[in-house]
Length: 114
Image 1 (tube, rainbow, N blue to C red):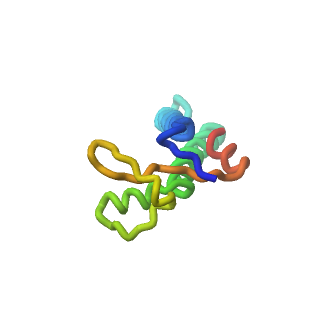
Image 2 (image 1 turned 90 degrees about the horizontal axis):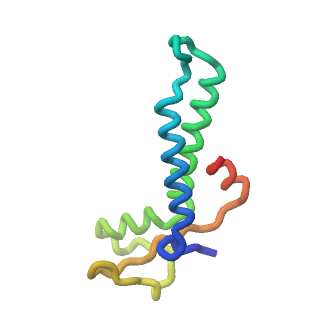
């Protein structure tokens, strides 16, 4: 079952917020304390935030048809868009296919969002 991001933007909004929060925290939460000493606690939190941000980005590419739509936008029209042929829509004078995301397991979602 696919969920159209054009109709339900909740997945895109959640992914964007998660990546933003994790990247900002990673920038400001260094693996060193205020005196410049390496600390295991900050190091673990730093690595966890990086992993979660990258995993969320990977999930978007792996569980959506974004790559296929990007290739079609670049002129590779023989790429299958992973949606029905009758789903093309008109946007700003162009006919495009909707961006869709597939469903994936609960544990994968929890790891991405938490």
